[in-house]
Length: 213
Image (cartoon, rainbow, N blue to C red; front, side, top):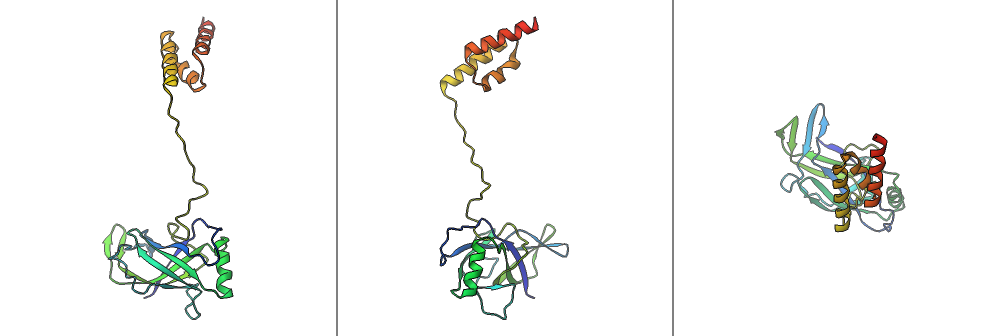
């Protein structure tokens, strides 16, 4: 039986030249529901047979036409299978490649066959398998796999933590002690976060005490 598994593109590198290889994750160890049972592909070196690599790149699993490229440097990495995609120089292939880089075609599917009856796991089976082709298709199924997965996401946020200086630590400790001494510890956090000086803290404390009186 020949099976397929669909995967989605990741971040697109639009700076890639027309002959540059495109990195791709062909499959992951994420489970896919097959009639209520999880099918998990073993992505270790002993779990996948890569003897048919390099793999042809075709469109919509239509093997009646010539391939539009090759998936080379296919490797098993434990939790995923990766490769580098080389598109053909034909006008059709280059147009498809341009659409891929532009983000128009956003998914692909790997065609494969299972090599054993599967090892039982939680809610499904873990299979040894052999990929034999990779296709560009319209509907993704495995969002953990795809092209350009090594590229940083545009949604990635960078957080910078600034370590307080000794002077800042001393000021904060003095403000905290001052607030505790006058029985208004609840003012400390606000004054510290505002960057108040000791003089400003004293003034705020006096104003608070006057208000309470």
